[in-house]
Amino acid sequence: MIYRKLIVHVIDVDSNIIDGYRNRTVSARCIDKDVCKVISYPEMITLQSDDDNTSTSFEIVIKALFLGVTDLNVIVGDEQLPSFAIRVLRSSHEVKVKQLFTLFLMIFVFIISLMMGTQLEVKRIMDIVRKPIGPTIGLLCQFGMMPIIGFLLAEFGLPEDAISLKMALFAVSTCPGGGKSSFWTIIFGGNLDLSISMTFTQTIAALLMMPLWMSTLGKHFTNVHVRIPFIRIVEGLFGLMIPSIMGMMLTYYRPQYIAYIRVWIKRISWAATIIISILAIYTYHYIFWLLTWPIIICGCSLPWLGYITAFVVALILNQSFKDSLTIAIETGIQNIGIATLLMMWCLPEPESDIAITIIFVTAIMTDKPLVIIYLISRAYTKCCKNNTVQQEDDKSKKIGEISTVTMSTIASGDSKEGNSEEVEKQKSW
Image 1 (cartoon, rainbow, N blue to C red):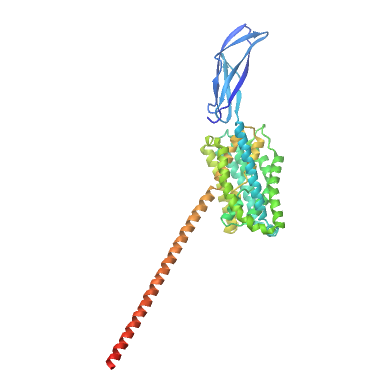
Image 2 (cartoon, one colour; image 1 turned 45 degrees about the vertical axis):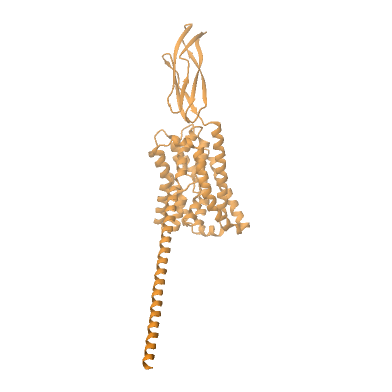
């Protein structure tokens, strides 16, 4: 059991009988036994007459077992009372852990955005703006294809009643590129200028495109009780742009820091990737009990299909392999922090915590293909390098042996010529 907090409900029962005293049996149960469990309740109650009706009150002790929403059914005599909604929330300790994790994540995003902003140079950006083929293809893939892919996965890949999960997956698909996309671009030798320019332009475009998608197709996954806070979305996107602008200003006044910061981007990103993964698993450990195959498949498919489709589209549009790789990475790796905040703003607890399940899967699995490809390429490069070194060593050994044989042959030839000259001298003597 993850949650041990006891929740006590006091239920007032009104009955329209006119007799003085009536005894009634009581039964109570939670519909979803994985969410909560009824511990105790009175098996018999006495309804006391009071003027026009009879009433009494009694207590039902409920033990919360897991995060979720369910109904409590209570039957008094032969009459079933209206269901009582039970909402099991996270404990106060886990809420504090979640707040600390969110704070750490915000600090990391700020630092990475600041460092990436230092790699932006106005001259190179203007060169890309004059021929914005790459960023335009990136915008097409990010805000044209990804929301469609996310909608189809949410509509046909997730259960019909999983409205919060569907909304969360679609929200992720509408987010701009970012996160660790520039980091992986550096790792794979992509076009860093294009990557950073795409991140910046997509964040600006998201001010319009994200509210547009959420107000059109996104309404399919909402109801009358859910309101999408468009103003807060815009505020969050503006907040992402501030550290990038600060980084650009830093390099303008201190250009000598560019190369130094570029070295530290890799180190900080690798360290933060490991730390964030560990903290995320600890903070959202309950998610592992909510995982199902549809959630896993849809959460993995969104970024992976983003890589493939964007790479193919870029190649079809005659982009170089380097630029196509950059566009694919930028499309597949999205700034899902915005989607997480959106779920917290839109949905009450515990629906927001449940919706984050599929965002968590997407976040954890987004860069795993890149990690595997990177490790395989490193192993292959190292293996080929060792083979090359071994072949060079074998060549040098053979050359050494040939040189030794040649020198010994020459030496033996010289000794033979010397001996024959001595014999001739003795004969003439």
